[in-house]
Length: 174
Image 1 (tube, rainbow, N blue to C red):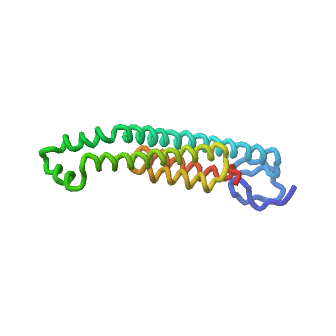
Image 2 (cartoon, rainbow, N blue to C red; image 1 turned 135 degrees about the vertical axis):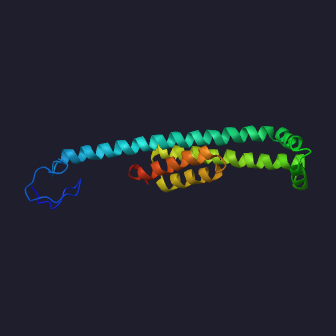
Image 3 (cartoon, one colour; image 1 turned 180 degrees about the vertical axis):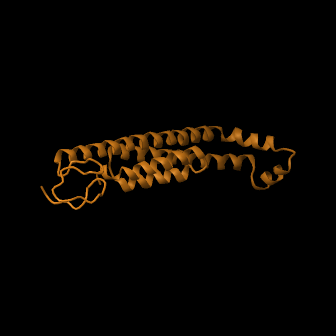
């Protein structure tokens, strides 16, 4: 048995010839134990990736669904804004910068950005599921988060997903 100066698991100093760590109980020089630990670590990473994929897809659904809703209802929503604020001090501020048409077009553009952000999230989830291109997966997830910055839920979901992807980096095949 090799002389170990410390336990590979807990870091405790060990006397030479020790078969088990007195602090954590880990069997020393146990290839089966090392394989078992690696399998447990890989299972944890796989679980992290699956949770991240689910969170990314939930956010992508919010972005795509919300974007489609706003895109197809932008004209009515724009008219509603002008009706709601008619007779208030805010009306002059809105009317100085927008017409019903220009506000509707602006809403449509924002909706398209949200839809693209959702599509980027879906691509990120696919790459994560395949355990491919960790840097690209992480960057796409981050971009999707930036696009969805207006939704607090989206930010929380994607921050958790980014953390999980970061922790699961070893199982990606780059």
